Image 1 (cartoon, rainbow, N blue to C red):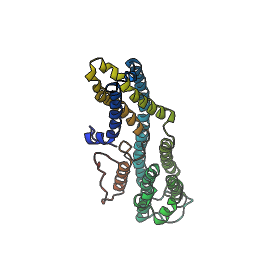
Image 2: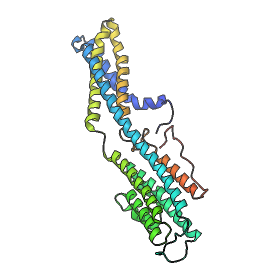
Image 3: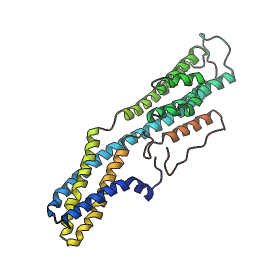
Image 4: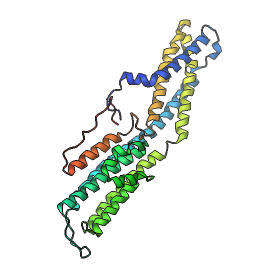
Length: 322
């Protein structure tokens, strides 16, 4: 996610210079054909070109609104993941506190050491789930050992890595752990168990929201024809402009090159902005900063556990927060 208020000109140039060369070459070819070669038949009236430009601007505006809605939906989902992760840690620490009086549970009450270990296991598995979901959305399984496995036992990490959808099974293990705490140790009563299960259900819903965006591409009929219409307009633009500049004098036809480049660059940039916002989970500069959000969750949850040796919050790299 790009954080700087204004885009650096260097960044704009890096993403624009290839298309600008194409625009310059095409408009210069039109001017050469119209002027030195004297083929005035390449000129077309400006009115149909201008009408096409208006239609294209409406179309790509509609497409960009849809693209931004996908990004906003993704960011809201990850905001929900952050909030529900904090809720989960709070429930673990405040509800799993002592043995609940139950005639079905025998044995001594849980010791402080046992409670601390169970707290750590449940909260660390939640951190692992957040990172596993991020890696799945970005298709980065090679980072599993560095960013997920440290929050799980060695056996659980090896088992989860073999699953087709590790985040799903991590939440399933959380639910199984709650059942054991209620049935075997008596550390949860029915009300507490139901309350924590609802949190897991909400996490499942948020995971499903991420998978919906990831696995449902932006409707290709909108994305493809937006691209085609923009480049069709760019192709016709110098043909419509050259006649207008020729009316100002024979030397003015070369003004077609800079003006055609400028208008083409504006339309192409609007199209590219919409295209780069279609898929917010690709680890690009305009995507949701899931790595930073996962680090925020890790810091908050580990601090709730009372840990002090915490990793630092992630900082932007070249104005981009990943």
